[in-house]
Image (cartoon, rainbow, N blue to C red; front, side, top):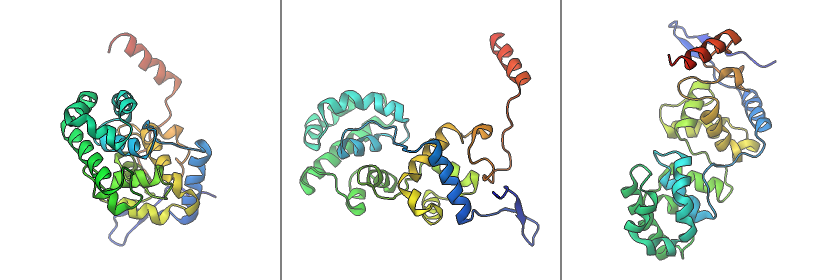
Length: 247
């Protein structure tokens, strides 16, 4: 039987959430896998280079906003050489709807030139080489290693950080701490897709302000104490009425 989200009490009387067991983590990911067998990034890309650029641009921006900008950009610049030829001003024209676009355009051009100079125009498969590129940190490198090269890495963004801490699956005070905890608790056979399952779960179900607990397939495993309740028909009607009345 799946254990409930009960809490243990320390000697000092402070309520502490019980840690996930390996068997619970197995059930957790088996359910996410059943709900979405083949999860994929929502960033649109055509090759490892365009994926890298898209991830760099996605910092503090939505995937939808990035895709809207990169659609036209990637049609004319899908290689480091073509991108570098555009220059910062040229790239800026395509991505000016994205936050911090000037700095991002500078990084995109700089990383394109570095790929040409040091890597023969190819995206490197090594973490150290990826993180040496302008605008590329550990999170971006993890996405590229996972999506482009099929490595079992986990890029901890805002969604994964929230899900890992809220559910109690892999609590941590920093993204790296959460990443390390996830690498220990995620079953090996689910590691390849764990990154996307957690992101999508956080983006559409375990949302920041009002998590959709009644729709959550791992609700009974989750350690979150303030789970939202199902909306009753009466409440739904009242909400609809208030919306019509502009309240």
